[in-house]
Image 1 (cartoon, rainbow, N blue to C red):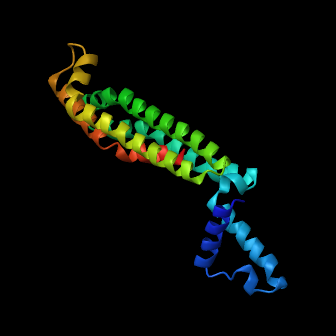
Image 2 (image 1 turned 30 degrees about the horizontal axis):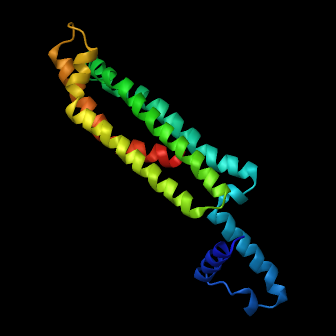
Length: 196
């Protein structure tokens, strides 16, 4: 453990109102060491937690998230279908772009976490923090691109993929829905990026 990590750990322990090793006798040093190890695990669980527990604690939220993402379009279609065929057709135009947004967010999150894991493995906390900040910036920048596309380009998108048989009502509903989905996708980008 480097000197800086030891200082950080000592600060954490002091914040938790734990006595330094010199203030307690030999009988309390084992307890202090146990508390230090627990504090170290809390700081960097990927480097210190047992693999089985780590795998479960990190995979369950991702599994649930992917299930929710997969069910989103199905549940959305069930509710929109109650409004009629035209509404369902309009929502169908947004599905490919929604899947593209999810793919970009997942790609950003997986890439960020790959680099983040390497930096944490190197015990380079400063570089890991930079990676996390840059990953969040990329997520927000990706959202901004899709928000601009939804705000300014939804009419173009619908007209590019629609044929002449589409009625004006369906096209107008598709443009409105696409704008709302793209502009409101900030939560999707942040959630998917940070959970990966």
